[in-house]
Image (cartoon, rainbow, N blue to C red; front, side, top):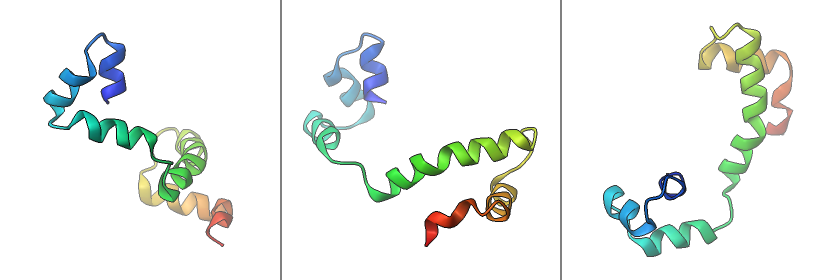
Length: 78
């Protein structure tokens, strides 16, 4: 979010104040490696988007989960 505001021409300090964050916390967050959860989410997102598109945009979380299990796309859970 802060990077998005920075791209719009707002300073990092201003964006942090508006969001109630410290600048040091923002910079520390940027230096941390991605969590296992975030990496897994990034791997699954294309599969989720594909299942949603194939449903014509009508499937919600439960149906998408079932569709992915049917496709055996959940082999990553091993």
